[in-house]
Length: 130
Image (cartoon, rainbow, N blue to C red; front, side, top):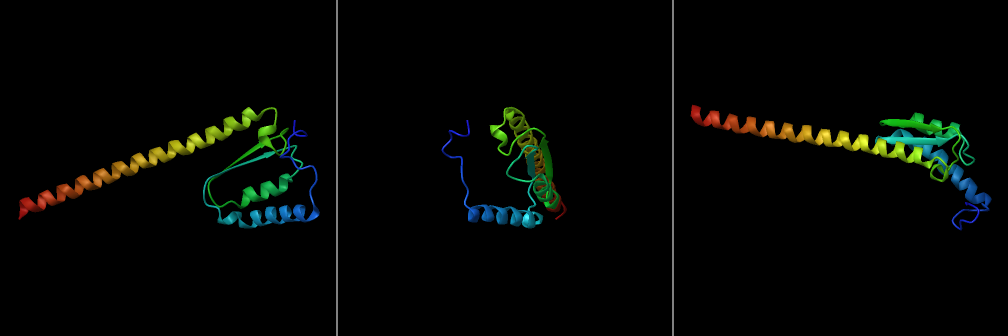
């Protein structure tokens, strides 16, 4: 299936390969600056990236993170015969963040309402005292 795909590279120039290596190395170096949630996934049969490199990137991430390893999966996880496992995990991960965001928004909105009501009650009591 991949052999017939025109978007798949069949040859890579050395300069391009070196550039990709430098990009991967710099991503690992910069990972400490990433403070947003990350779902890191790797396949055990990845023939593009070494698992050590992906693991090092994951370890250096500064924010909330989750690791997923698919032992018999290739580099292109969505081209794997069990891509449904990958999608299920991704959708669960996204849904859990959306639920937390909704909970936080609800809590924040409730706190704002309570603060506003307290502020109005304080004004009311000051008016009655004066």
